[in-house]
Amino acid sequence: WNMGLASANGSEKEKPKKVLFLFLGDIDSSYSPSLIGKEAGYETIILHGAYIDPMMKIADIVIPAKSWLENGGTYKLLNGEVKKFVPPLKAEDGVKNARELLSELADAMGLGKIETEDLLKRL
Image (cartoon, rainbow, N blue to C red):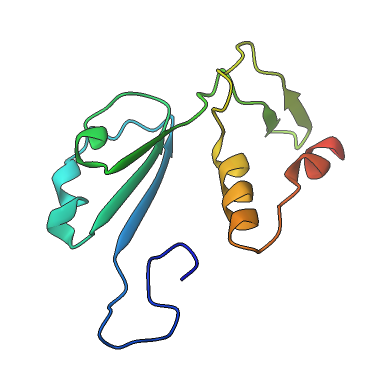
């Protein structure tokens, strides 16, 4: 409601809009984008992706994402050992990974910022 997707007063005259928010990251979305698009009944399509691909043609809003080479984090070895991954490339200013973007969206919606960096420091 705060984002304007539905009426805050619960008016039956105003139906909520169907919004599709795709977090593609490094995923290749060259598979049949028309099956996910407006033909499926979505009024607004938002894409968060690292690469230029066919889904961008049907998206109403495109938000750049970090590629795996720009995104730090952790990974687990087969023996269970957790290792930290330091990204070899620096992303351009303002480009976020899905975790950072979701945290900022939650904060903007009044749900509070999700501090995931604290979780990563414990590993």
